[in-house]
Image (cartoon, rainbow, N blue to C red; front, side, top):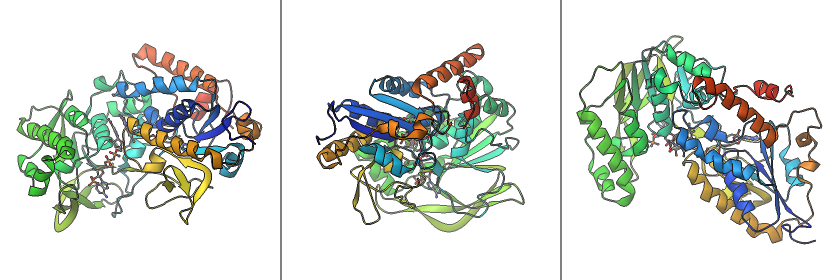
Length: 462
Ligand SMILES: Cc1cc2nc3c(=O)[nH]c(=O)nc-3n(C[C@H](O)[C@H](O)[C@H](O)COP(=O)(O)OP(=O)(O)OC[C@H]3O[C@@H](n4cnc5c(N)ncnc54)[C@H](O)[C@@H]3O)c2cc1C
Ligand SMILES: NC(=O)c1ccc[n+]([C@@H]2O[C@H](COP(=O)([O-])OP(=O)(O)OC[C@H]3O[C@@H](n4cnc5c(N)ncnc54)[C@H](OP(=O)(O)O)[C@@H]3O)[C@@H](O)[C@H]2O)c1
């Protein structure tokens, strides 16, 4: 039997997840010079993962990556199977049997826990659920956020925290022409949130915002940025970091923060306050968040290795809302080894490994489920390319028997009554969303439930 990759025996690959990493893996396979057939399986009817449901609605330029994915999806060698959850609707074992190789690109759909008392009180939310809600993700559309509170604390100082902060601090006029979900725009229109504390456990030089996202927080129509200049006194290790190339981004951030600190209050109706070197140790309230207790930290360790150490000193803030934006986390999938501590599928050079560290032939991973929840959209491209390089290097060793692909998986063919969504179906839903948005001056009005999307196709859910 010939090595898969020829006209007689095309290399059949199943890709699980239609986010950036899945599409970049498909692109690398299409460019490999092999004869390939790619089936991408996605649990939602809509493709594009966090580009659709994570990237902030007021950052439309960042969604332009979708044009690249659309081109890939229109390739004759590519098929999309939406509304199918791998590990539930299709067992991983069945998938492994139907393809020469399976690439998992299922992202990181859960979130890290703070592990402090009161974390689950009403009024304490994860960024994951808030982001999913304002972006119209079907899993989160029914969440209710108590925006009657005046003081909100955002824990974490990464770009997701910046997104959450902007959405809370922007006026309806700044959001109404974006693709924000209608339910979120309606709720934000009556929000009483006025003071937003963005709190980092380490210092200003360790904040993970990128400069553009940080600068933007100082550029909102109706929000002042507030920063005590004393917060910007840096230790010798942080100053040493600035001297090196990899410290340039942090140096830029501190320059931006210094400029924020010089600004007088202009009396705008909302305030964004930056606090550093504080870890929440308890979220307190009878049946709703009433205040957050923080422990003051000091930095410990050398340049680029500084971690937060508690000093024992405590301070607290009266606040009715907490958003924990401390990182996403991958979730397990039945039939695939899982590193529960890191929230990733264990891999070596993109090859999935079992508990003994041995490679499982034919199973690969890329993107956030491989690396963990860091990196921008573009970071996933080299990650997926590297995984596909491993797959191609393995070709001579893979079982060469021809595989049926989706034709061997009755669920993907809708045999059990499930309405599987093809890429052409998605284009119908997409067009309908754009039409719904147009009268409101929005790029689209997303459907926020699977049923609504299937109704557009004249089908009911299964
Ligand atoms: C809130 C937020 C905002 C961001 N904003 C930006 C930004 O502005 N610019 C930027 O460059 N980067 C941004 N990023 C980072 C970027 O979104 C990620 O780097 C990227 O989406 C990761 O790609 P991925 O394919 O690994 O995962 P995802 O994008 O999460 O894609 C995973 C896909 O797998 C599907 N899936 C999961 N489980 C299954 C299953 N069992 N069966 C079938 N399908 C499944 C999911 O539904 C999803 O569609 C943001 C991230 C977040 C969290
Ligand atoms: N516009 C954009 O380009 C954009 C937008 C959104 C997201 N993204 C990307 O998506 C990725 C994920 O973003 P993210 O913001 O979720 O993650 P992130 O950049 O890793 O930031 C997480 C933040 O949470 C803090 N944190 C972690 N554990 C904590 C704990 N136990 N207590 C208190 N604070 C804690 C971290 O502090 P430490 O530093 O001390 O760990 C950090 O400030 C990033 O690569 C980001 O750049 C990009």
